[in-house]
Length: 270
Image 1 (tube, rainbow, N blue to C red):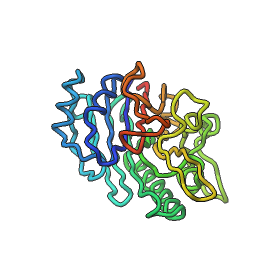
Image 2: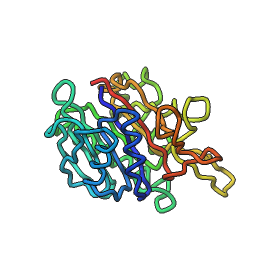
Image 3: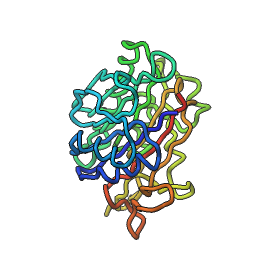
Image 4: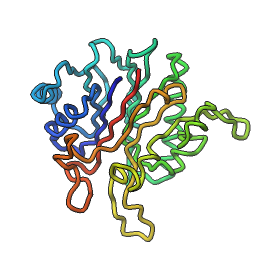
C-alpha cells in the first residue's frame, strides 16, 4: 500500500502541519503545490515527526514539490509542462513499469475563464496520451489543483479529461464520439462532494457575490485511468491534522483555515 498526500499550501510556511498529517496518515508520497518550503527544512520537519527516510527526488518542475519515502531511484522525472503546471513522474512500484504520477496545478479563475480551462484540459489530455504511448504505460494517476469542479466541461467532456463518476462506465476504457476514440479517466472525487460524506463538502470554499454560487468547490482532485483505478483503496478530504480530530483545518464556520485549500489523501494497493 502506498499513501499519497496532496495539498495546495497557498504559499504559506506549513511544514509543521504537513509533517503532522504525514505522521498521522502514514504518508509515503507528499505532493505540494504553491509551496515555498525549502526542501531540506521539509525533510527535517518530517524526521522530527518520526517520518524518516524521506528525500526529494530530482525534478525540473518549478511549481510542484514531491517528497518520497520510496527507495531512491524509484521516482523518476519524466515530463514537465511549465504552462500547464504539469509534472509527470514514473513511480517504480507494483508490476513493471510502475505507475505514472501526473501532478497538475492549473491556472485558476478569475485569470482564466471556463473556456480557457476547457482548452487547457484538452491539451493536457493530448499530452498525457502522448506520454502513455511514448512510455508504453497507461497506468496514470492524475492529481492536483485543477481549479475545476468534477462537473465542469473541462473535466467531463469526451474531448477534454473525460473523467466519469462511475467505475462501471470507466471500465469500458473508452467510447467513440463522432468517430473519435475518447479514453476515460475515473473520478472518485464525486463521492466526496457535499455534506453526506464523512469529510468536508469540498476542498475549497468561495462565496461568490453572483446569483450562482456553489460555495464549496472540488478543485483538488485525483483521477485514475481504468487500468489503475481498482488499486484505489481510499480517498478522502482531510479536515484535521490528527486521526483523533485534533488540530482542525477548519474555522468556526467550517471553512479552510491554514490554507485556502484542504488536503486530500489517497491510498493505492500497489
